[in-house]
Length: 376
Image (cartoon, rainbow, N blue to C red; front, side):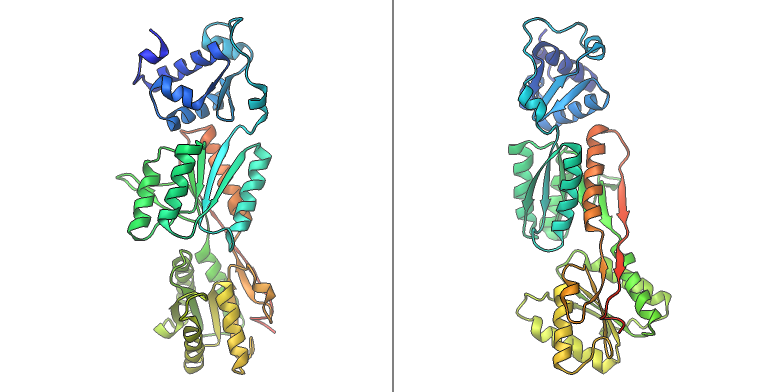
């Protein structure tokens, strides 16, 4: 019976067949194995990852080679035949792992995350194929489908849209993709028991709490919050703000929790002026604003109206992308973006090495950077 005569083999049998093919040929490609073993390319990659973690084969870009020495010979049952072709040297020199990465933007917030992933990948000799989307689930799905089906990556790092009907459908697609992956700055569950998907996130709620504590230490008793409605970070920031306000006994009326459009929306100028009006009318003396562009614009509008920052209104921003460029420079909560990228790649690399390891969810703490907008 040839290898291709026995489709539907059990996993251990399939992996033994894979090693037999490697013994005969020296090097095999993922698509060749998928065809001959009658399984998906994703299943083949998982088998290669497992066999590689056991030291039985060696991964190369697009396939695998059999390790030299007694381990490979014992598993295969015999040494290589004289007519077996040698592994392609060019393949062996290329990165062993190819990772697909899809993020919602290549401009704001995400460049430092990408930098962290690339630094970690370079240290591991891996290749990263990056795709930038537009905060739209359909766009993200298109990029992901191509990376999985056409490019044939070994694993995915993705920051998917998870809300709305299209976001929920994208999450279902990710759950069914049968592909090693780590979610970045997002969380989701899968299966009937709601098992968590592997993820690395910033503790945005903790960061918001840091900002409130800083303002309370400065004597502020009415601390408002401004968040943009479309941002997936806003709910976490709001939760941390509310928890900290409750801890210190600060008021939580509607005038203090303002949910707005972002700075690029045509309604923003009117909304920004309304926020300042509410601060003046309610005696609010401090604001936590997500994110930097909205905070900077609010500060400029306050100055135009003769409202001193921080004398009349202290401002803390969330993200710290361009906060230092403001006049005065903005106190900011800085999420650990580069560390998030490094950690995400590390989790995925460990998953590829050991597909059976328990699911890991990593939470990394942000930092508060104190500047002139909160204390003169």
